Image 1 (cartoon, helix red, strand yellow):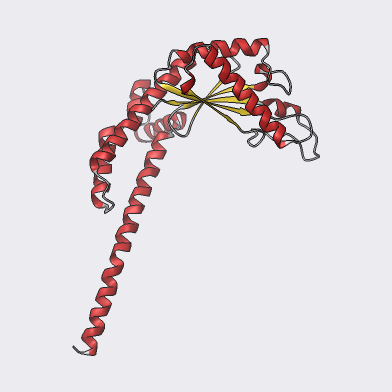
Image 2 (cartoon, one colour):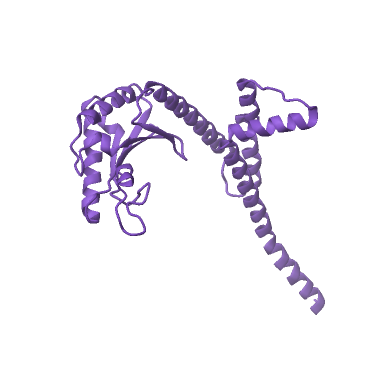
Length: 268
């Protein structure tokens, strides 16, 4: 074999060995783009979308077409579950990781079902809590929702002893949550922020005591204890700074940072 042919063969081998890198990079790029699209459709600004629709209608037709709420919701849901499944099938078929299409389809359908159940549960709980100005309902990035309870309503200052109002708020909330005990599990997370000199151990202990107290009330009110877990974060995650630039306490922020969160998720 001549030097030229040996050199040409070596170059072909090296080029062939590097081809999988491009295929892998292409696949990862497709997956990344696909999940970006999914994320964008999961966080649609309804008001902004409606404004854009009206502007386009005026630009192309010279008049504004009023869409009903139902029509607008249908417009947002153009990507159906079936289309997502088919897209994932295509991506999986192009990969070489051995992930079966059945596993992907099952995971997508289970997640979609869990999200629908938790969204419906959140709406029902919000309806039950109408008129209760103390509990704030928030959405999790993952499937589920969050119930924030202010510490100044629940507890006495720098204490885990419940106030009379706090006891009533908890009893009403637990009565509502108990109706969904067959589908939910709850993580009780305590946060504290003392007006005294910073003491991480004290803050952690107080937040643990408060979270434990809330879980105790929930169990005593009929919530199955196996559905409840407790976690304490002390003053590690304040919503607002406790002190200003001069080091002086911001009392309003101290009050807001003292809180208990109930993280509600689908029971496995």
